[in-house]
Length: 439
RNA sequence: GACCCCAUCGUCUAGCCCGGUUAGGACAUCGCCCUUUCACGGCGACAGCGCCGGUUCAAAUCCGGCUGGGGUCGCCA
Image 1 (cartoon, rainbow, N blue to C red):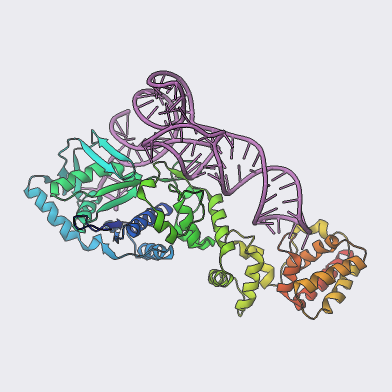
Image 2: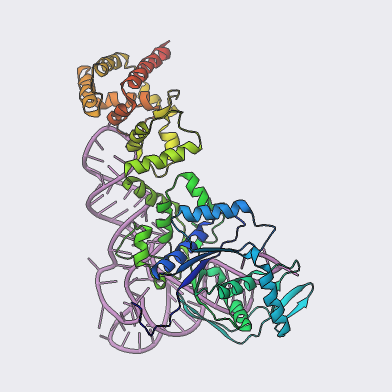
């Protein structure tokens, strides 16, 4: 409730990626917390593209970043590009020169820090006091006439009236420098909040050495955006109540920047996998199928003309046992192709020649009209019993015949999904296998 | 090295602000149950307040020091 006396400015937040690489998992979380705060405060969310490094900034990175932000479920009210505002930064640099706060030197423009003690009131960490600065001057306009980070950052934050700067902990040491620039420029100083860093599994910096670091790579591995968001939310923040699974729209309601941790959090693929499998299990089958279809299309994995309702059955077969969509490529291969070989580790299962018993099974299976798992199970067990076998003695070799593997989904469900024709075909192939082994 | 940040199971965390808990949950690991395999699911086990002082009847919780980890010190952002 807003009172007449409140002079509070509308909250305005920014996420400021640099298009010199794909959206990093850490950047994604920074974006998430910024977005969440804006949502919670009913404020505006600005995307500011920090493309001042003309050499390293690439259009493809920019596009990927925007795509990833959207994919994760976020949107923005405004987008600005620093590369379009170079004149502005130069103007302010000139102003500082006139006021004797900056000077030209070695082809660049330097800002002179008027250092006293600088104190930051961090929303997460409380007061941070800097008693010393490592330098006395800072480049604000580089030799090539482009602005340096700390300078363009201040000017944009001030001019676009950013009220809260929420960024990674690695920026803490930039903050006193920026505060001094704000002061020199006569700008109002925003609120700051420094997020803990995401650490590599062993601790230390999250780098390429530890596997995927960009959102895009996780997408390509077949992680759901909701799962990535959920997992990232759990890194440095908790909704409380022992809750682990939380959707973005729910987090929006309960998020409070003050609850964010101060400690760096190690990234755990195991936990991400678990969160992802939770989302897969709980997702409505139709939606899941369309996501899977879209995912598998990319690698041309699905044979042309695969029907959606067939794919849906396959997805139903596997949704309880995969952690990410890419698992399907090896596990569900047999659902789409007939040309698979029996895996090397199935030797013990196929050792005993059960041609006769398989023949009996074929008879029973072909006699079924409604080829569903109940009927299949009934006939299957009857066949085994008739041959004096335990069901499991027939189950294992048949699974190998149908899937090529010793492990997989429930056999009767698998048979129903494959359909009578393919089941019979593959059973014949099993008999042939034994024939060859003998000869 | 200088400046700054941080510290609860192996990992992510609840608890800390407003001292009194068998320090709770999740992932991972291990065991049992379910079962046609693998999973899922269910049940259970393992495992933690970095150390030393201080304040207090009482400290994970408040204070100080130490140790340990992290970040920054670019005409990168």
